[in-house]
Structures are given as structure tokens and as C-alpha cells.
Length: 247
Image (cartoon, rainbow, N blue to C red; front, side):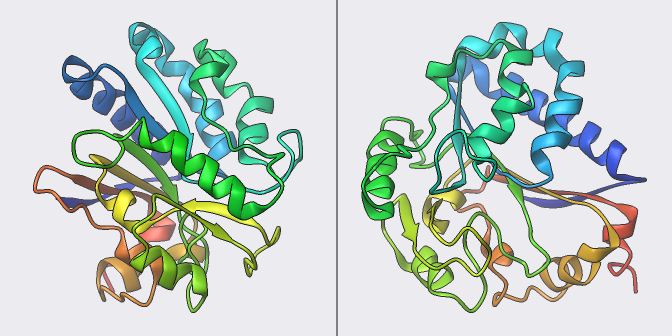
């Protein structure tokens, strides 16, 4: 199932996203020993960190079950400003929710190479896969070029992300700095139960149209599609980002 959820502005978009995350956790909890949530970086860090406190009381009883992973991560020290983990940590996302940091699965940033970092992260991700061979909830962003995670258009990461049987791959020469990263691949992204994109602003409007209307598979984000009939794909967008959908 795929759905575009259009809100008036960015603030309401994030509110709707957080409500849907909370509902997904509530729906999954009875059947799960633990629930995996994949985080993405960029503007989502501050947006989620500012809104999620409003859902703390509803989420409180589920916190011990939550396991946070990263849909992609920059191969930098964990206290580096480019680290997505550090972004969520410094914006107090985990402390607001009282998430034990042992339930936050960050990369091994001191691995000797980005390839070894990816292999280590893959090993740890295997223990978190659900019965579908994926994760429970992935929160995804989209760049102006249509990339998601660290899967970039017209780039080796996109081709490898489509064809690899690995959960995690290394990216050596990202077109967006920093160059070295690790990222989930499409097979395991698409095996997940809930796939939630968030895109706001008129700068995303053309790309949203190419994905949702034109179904342009040359765009990495357009290749995010649940493999299972009960999989959920939702695009949380504001009116400026949706302006090309009705033209």
C-alpha cells in the first residue's frame, strides 16, 4: 500500500509523521519481542527531536522494546558534526524518550576502513531482522536529487544498492560529502513493514512528481516499494512539496 499524506505546512507534516510512527509502534508491539526503527539524517533530526516529546506519554511503555538503527551513516567519528548518531544524540532525541543507549545501534566508527565498518554493521543488523527479513519502521528522507539513505542517482551506490544481497554496503565516493558512508540496501529496505518518507518544501516538488506520478525508476527513492502485501509506504509531504502532483 502506498499513500501520499499531504499537510498544510512542514510543522503539521512532522506532527502527522510522529502520530503515524506512534500508531505503527502500537500496532506492532503485541507481536514483537522488539521493534526496529531506522533513522535518517538531515533535517529529520531536528524535526523529529522537536516533535517527539509530544508523544512521550503514549510511547513510554514501548520504549524498552525499541531498537534504533541508522538507514545510513557517515563514516566519521561518533562525535563528529556529520554523524547522524551524534545529531540525534545532541538534539536529545534519545534522552527525551529515555531510550537506553545500548538499544541504539550506531556504526563502529573506529573500524580501520569503511568496508570493515559496513561488514561489522551488517553482522549486528542480522540479529535485528524481523520474520520478513527486514526491519519494522524505516524513516526515510529524500534529497533534491532523489537520493535516499546513501543511494545516489547515476552512481555506483544506486546500482549496488539495487543488486546487492547484503544488508549493508560501503560507499567510498559519495557525491555528497562526506565521501565515505555505509547504507542499507533496497532488498532490506523493501522487506520492512512501514516505510515512511518525509519531504517538505517546494524544492522537492518536481522530484515528488517524478516519483509518485511518473514512477521514474532512475530515481533511487522511487525504488522504495514494499515487497509484501501488508507493507506500508507513506509519503508525508507538505503542500509546497505536493504542488506538482495536481498539475
